[in-house]
Image 1: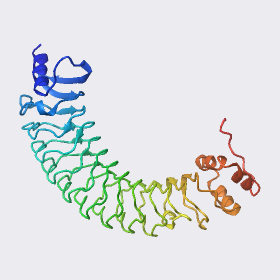
Image 2: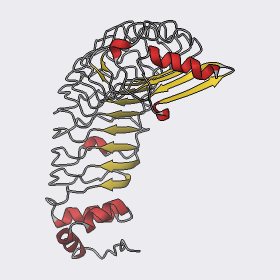
Image 3: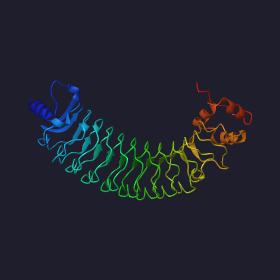
Image 4: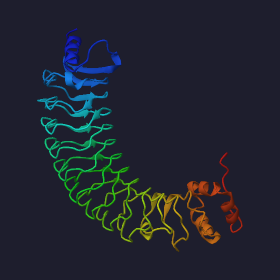
Length: 352
C-alpha cells in the first residue's frame, strides 16, 4: 500500500491526473525501493513539479513516452546518480537543457528517438562517460557540435539515422575507440571527411545508405580492421577507388545497390576476401571484370538487363550454386532463355 501511495504522489507531481490506465505506468521495486519507472502517457510539461523524482535516488531505469512538448525541466533527473538507462522517445521535444544529464555518471543506455530535436547542446553528454548505447534517430538534427561525443569513450552503439544531418566534422567521432555500430543512414550528408572514421579500431558495422553522397574518400575505411559490414546503397555513386576496402580482411557484407555503377568496382574483387554477401543490384551494369568477386551470396536484382549473353554465361558459371543469384535470374525470363542457350543449367524449382 505504501508503494502504491508513493507512485500516486509521484504521478501527480509528474502531471498525471486520474483516471489513467494501468498500462500507462510500469514500476519495479526492490527491497521497498523504486528502481524502474516507465510512463507511457502524455504529460503536460508545464505542470511537472520541481525535481519530482528526488525521493527515488535508487532509480536505475526510467522511460517517459507520450507526446511531451518542446522540452523537459533541467532538474528532472537531478541527483539521480544511479540511473543507468533513460528512454525519452516518441515525444515532441524540440530542444533539451544542457544540464539535463549532468548527474547521470552511471548512465549506460540513452534513447531519445522520434522527437523533433533540431540541435543539441555541445556539453549535454559530457557527464555520462559510461554511456554504451546512444540512439538519436528520427529527429530533425542538421548539424552536430564537433565535440558532442568527445567524452563517450565507452560508446558501443550510435544511431543517428532519419535526421537531416548535412555534414560531419573531421573529429566528430575521434574519441569513440570502442564504437562497434554506427548508423548515419537516411540523412542529407553530401560529403564525408576522409579521416572521419580515424581511430574507430573496433567498428564492425557502418550504415551510410540513403544520403546524397556522390563519392567516397579512398581512405575513409583505412585501418578499420574490425569492419564486417558496410552499406553504401541508395547513394549516387558511379565508382569507388581501388583502395576503398583495401586490406579489410574481416569484411563480410557489402551493399552497393541502387547506385549508378556501370561495372563492378575493382575494390570488391580481392582474391584474399570471401564475402558472405554482396549486393550490387539495381545498378546499370554493362560489363563484368575478368575476375568476379568471391561471395557466398550475390544479389544482382535489377542489374542484369544490360549484360550481353557472354557475361551472363560467366555469372552463371561462377555463381551457379548461389540460390540468391539464381532467383535474380529466374525473375527475368528473357535473360534466363539467353543463358540456357549458352549453358546447360538446371534451376531449382521454387516449389521444391
